[in-house]
Amino acid sequence: MQSEWKFTAKDIVEKPDLFMSGHRACAGCAPATVMRLIMKALRGPTIVTHATGCMEVVSTIYPYTSWAVPWLHTAFENAAANASGIETAVKMLRKKGRIKYEHVDVIAIAGDGGTYDIGIQALSGAAERGHDFLFVLYDNEAYMNTGIQRSGGTPLGASTTTSPAGEVIPGKLEPKKPIADIMVAHEIPYVATASPYYWRDLIAKVRKGLEVEGPAFLHVFAPCPRGWRSDPAKSIELSRLAVETCVFPLWECINGEYQLSAPSKVLAMAPQKKKPVKEYLAVQGRFRHLFAPKYEKLLDEIQRITDQRWRKLLKKCGMAVV
Amino acid sequence: MAVPKARRDMPLTPISYPTFGSMGKTGSWRTFRPIIDYSKCTKCTLCWVYCPDVAITRREDDSPEIDYEYCKGCGICANECPVKAITMQREEE
Image (cartoon, rainbow over all chains, first blue to last red; front, side):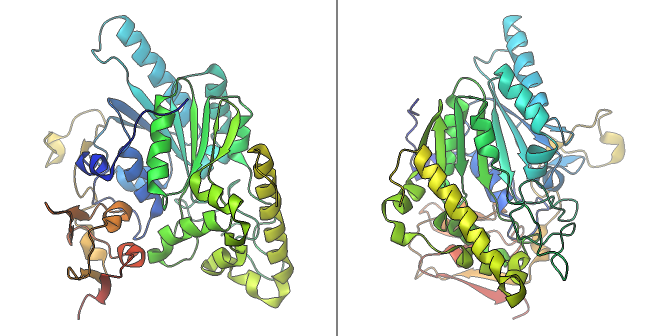
């Protein structure tokens, strides 16, 4: 499957912003940039459904909403179940001739809590039933909305309010769950990872996810300056560093065939360009304790896990492992 | 679509209406104000792409303009600008 849609910056400019200004996201919120870029990739009538999470809380304060598309809020656990319901309802309405649209795209958006932990049963079910929808996971690596509690998406060694770094533990003790690989195992037609710094890549992937027949899953990296204790100005820079250090490699899996996306492919071709994980960790306050002598060993452990996962991915993509 | 002004105008079902400034004029949150030096600007529009608050609009000739009513002053535009044409200045200065 190759997307026919070749877009220029002008196409993106001419599209109105469907995620509007004046929402109450923190200053420097990368998920807000992600939402806006996602909305730039739409191809026609679209319904968005959103699990509870930061982006739902900040954008829809009754009686207002920042979304200029039909938008439904749903509970934490059932964004994907809701999306399958919408998709089926639209199908039936069209059969009965009650709506005029040829096709209606359905997007379900959830944070990492709503996908990794609470929402995975609904997502797994919807993927198995083969509903035609796009599931977007914006991963800010903890339950930021309720006060930075750890989730399945929190990386090893990150300090959160429920895994505080201190005398006893060095932050979270378990590495991040590879959610995108779990979705690949469902044998759905399209799975991809994206990062807002590479915005063209992100928009193209959203569009591919919408164009594909059947369920599509998009894992978007979204730095959160509040929870990551980083400088708000560095949110987008962090999303670049995560890719350059191979903490969050960009790839897509079309019908089970893995392939690296351009920004990560460059690193696979020229391994000397790959940066050490330290560079990515040093700009975040949640990893500050790792630079104290007591927990120094954990830094090597994080580097080892990152390298191991990167090598595994290279093998899946059929690239030479260096 | 008209946004209800008072409680009695609101519908019985919980429907929200799309609007700018659902949280009011968020520009009042700002501590640092981004200022564009148009002599340096190359019109690459990266600031427009990355702004999380959609507070940067593009003029006819593609040069960016900051909407200070909604800009929260996060500094992403200044950090990402490849030619460093945007500087952050304290509000009271």
